[in-house]
Length: 147
Image (cartoon, rainbow, N blue to C red; front, side, top):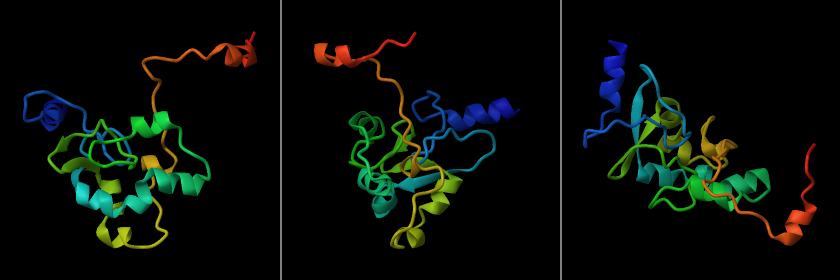
């Protein structure tokens, strides 16, 4: 019965199945955990908490451009969001924890932190690129083989 419930939860309008992933924290929402919807408007209200700029100001170092690219979502430039999250129009799927942390009342507070497990809260891990660029001759001379 649990398998049937999960299969129904992950079925999309086009008939395919896709994992339920939170747009804010990039975690897979499994089991009976509540799935919420968050609008692009509410994500924009929280820009000061979940943007690349906020991340770089807090950690005092630039975020690698590859990570910025890996955590970008069309139409929401420079916000650290999961491209794996399901989107329908202007709404994304979101876990209950991130949804409650992104409420308008919390978004308006100055200096408020991102949600606990948000990508912008230090969880910009990324994934290996499909193509790894080989460094030029000068860089190759600086690489020390590990034996």
